[in-house]
Image (cartoon, rainbow, N blue to C red; front, top):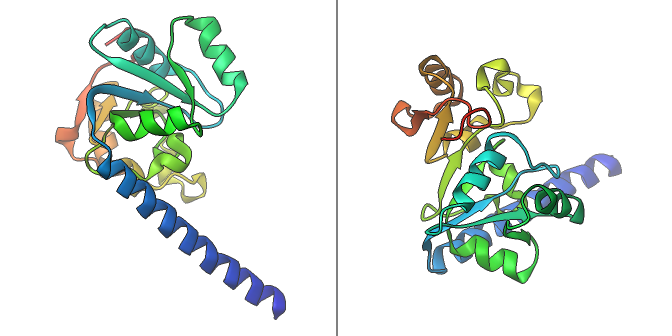
Length: 193
């Protein structure tokens, strides 16, 4: 019985912690002035690859965009700088990382809002772009409830790319993204947008 009560108590504290964290981050994201040309990229699990990587490198080449990649470890930092020495890479949990994140008008995701780690709770003033990490037809994990991706987290994206018109309709059907928020770009990692 003690174990069961402890689990229940832990669940309650976890829900309170998430509620507080979500609202603190949304509040901070709301009060910071947004910089319209500031874009933040990030991927979960120390990744730097696929569509996000290609778009990051392409956008970084334009002088009118300030493009940053938020990282959690030196491993990813070194990987990015080896591949792209001029990249702006910032540690996510540093003061600089927080300031860049809260000022960013756009965040670019490849797996969902979990790519942002604790920053996944953003206000409606920050626009989210889902670029996926490959062709989405290969495996829609959201159909499988054990996969762990929550449909509502991805369907809240302001813009989602797809590889084809068929993929747009599959994305709409599986994730609930409005069809007007889905654009066909092809596979960015194969041909830059």
